Image 1 (cartoon, rainbow, N blue to C red):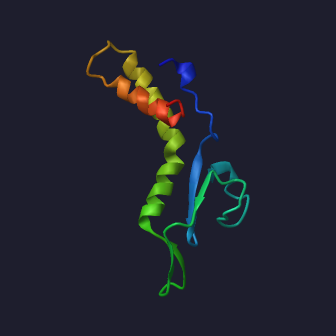
Image 2 (cartoon, rainbow, N blue to C red):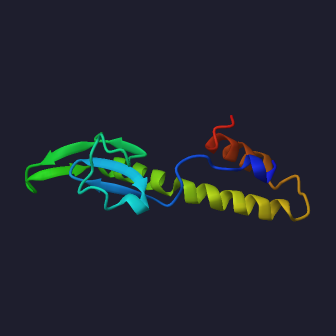
Image 3 (cartoon, one colour):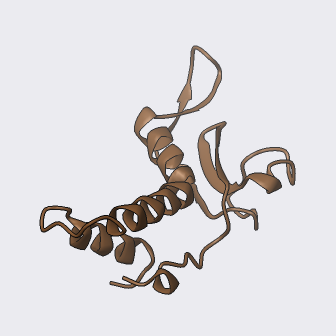
Length: 117
């Protein structure tokens, strides 16, 4: 896989997960202070969800379930994970080729992340 085909065309990193008040959003870190809060129709959102939200009677406010929080935390790291995967893939490929290096699997995952599959 050539380096030119390994270009991420999505929203530039870094991204942050904003998890509060019964909602989750992911947006660029440099837009953290654009608005106070996490809003469904905010144009800075890369992704938003209120799935997993519930009202906590003891705390008297909305909370988000752990699974949704973990999903959004992972989504927020996706561009950096992809960047490092590509960097490591290229480093491994520069060594002596090995049938057991699994670069074909790595290439398939990168292509999937870049929307090329």
